[in-house]
Amino acid sequence: MILVAALTTLITMRTDTDTTILRTPGMLYQTREDGRISNLYAIKTVNKTPNDMPLRLELMNVTGDLELVGKTLELKGGALGRSEAFIILAKDQLTGMKTNVVVGIYSGDELLEEVSTSFVGPITTGNK
Image (cartoon, rainbow, N blue to C red; front, side, top):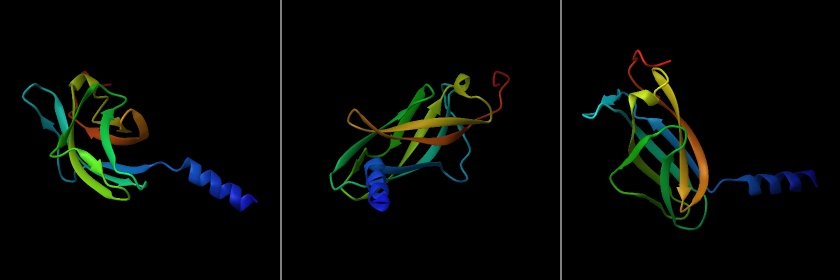
């Protein structure tokens, strides 16, 4: 009974996707023409369902832009998707040399998961 209950709990708590968002190794931050700072990220997402799934990414805890490089994220059922994206923040959004950024992974209006990553920027006098 305990094993059945544990298995049932694990299955019902399982997310439809599993996403990792990591800064591209060896890349420093870039200062854009408008003064905002950007970092390049590698995104890997596994669709754990048998259904095709269009995905959308949104910044959750900071104000900025998230720009996918190339095509949109549309995952086939059971497939692994890879993409790259720039996260672009104004200097006033940075909390130090490293800022924690939370990205929401959505399919339509449904929030599937939240993924944390770090954003690297310059040390400025306005940072805490």
